[in-house]
Length: 424
Image (cartoon, rainbow, N blue to C red):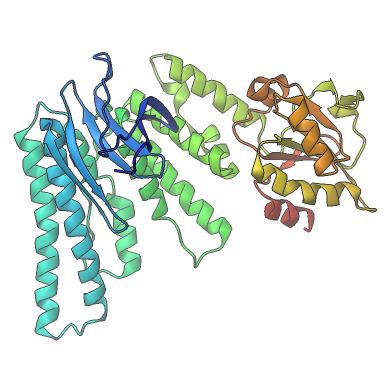
């Protein structure tokens, strides 16, 4: 899987979070070993190398031995011991082989004359390869009803559109049928990253370079509604999917997606209160409180120069709150633009930096190096500071642009979005 002494990590996916179960290093033979706790919950786990190679393994209280060969073109996994993984990789290896062939043949029929005999033979081969994937998946699921592997095989079984459809029609068909092989009552899938991958792939069907941003976002939110509607048949599944979508949208700064879920979720209708549900409801409340058009949370503190800073006492027409850290490269990339905004002769924006650093020495060094003149606040408590918590901070850099009344105008995720808004 990698090179001598390379780090290997065993990871469990839970919603938008990745929990490392254990780690080790490859020995000189390219081998490694984990001894897992018998209390480890059965499910689908991932192995990652430090160089980014990954593979799935099903853990279900049995020894697992395998050989993995990886090059720049593909990855081959041979299971030596583990009934669960033998079954799983019987399907995965076949599916990957057939999908490569299908990709090649699909390009052929896109350009080959339909009246030629070779075209029809190619179409027949496509149907054969598709049917083989479907049959192997069906047989493995039917023949092994008491095992975990079939749960994950069903999710991995692809849905195909008719090859005679136009590209647009195929995309529309997949938007309606993409989850045909997913049982949203199957909570075993919650111990896997495969459901996440399925949802992400489904939402990617709504990418369309021919429509404007507003239309794209509206279509994408329709896809989000479809996912939530399908997941709503099971409380555990629904809370998991809402949590996953919120985590993903927070990571990419998709404000409309967060607001949409906050306004249209069905969490209040769920019967059984759980820790996850309670945490999720709190997160939803925070998203609603921090939505564009709402008042920014008030704070009063002292900046690094000893000056009193009260958000609602700032008289500038606009206030820009910049959550950042000295160790964050993306934050540093934005400082030059913020300096230009703050030092511009016609400036009507007060910039306030809110650092999540824990080292005052490191923070002051960056402030000096980057010639930062705007006030910087630092509680030196990392992510747990009171102001970051008030603002639901999950990533940096994070920006809130406020008007004179401290109403949230926008939350740009990068320098380009900030410039676009200020140049309107």
